[in-house]
Length: 95
Image 1 (cartoon, one colour):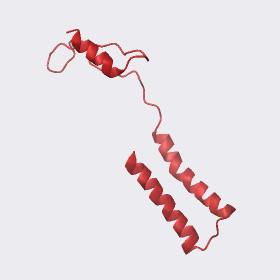
Image 2 (cartoon, helix red, strand yellow):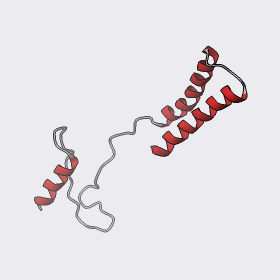
Image 3 (cartoon, one colour):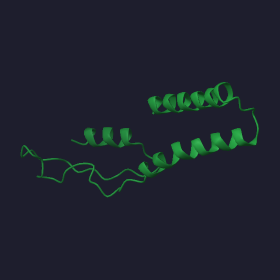
Image 4 (cartoon, one colour):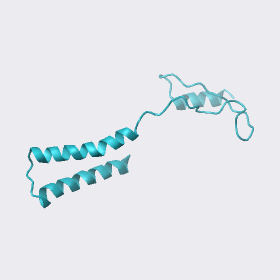
């Protein structure tokens, strides 16, 4: 996420420098609209790529489905009030 943010800041800073210093634009409505358009160009592909992923994938393999033939304990998804770490530790203690 950090490289993406740094890339965004670099692109916007370069655009501001180019519009103001190279083209001589003042900070007015067309300057704001140009930056708005650039933000749209940067945001649309990012938002299209960040679509929700399906949540029906199994977190662990079913019992007996492990590639090496080992038995795998299937844990239920913890409720909202329990963290995954706490649920995992509880499952380990129950062995």
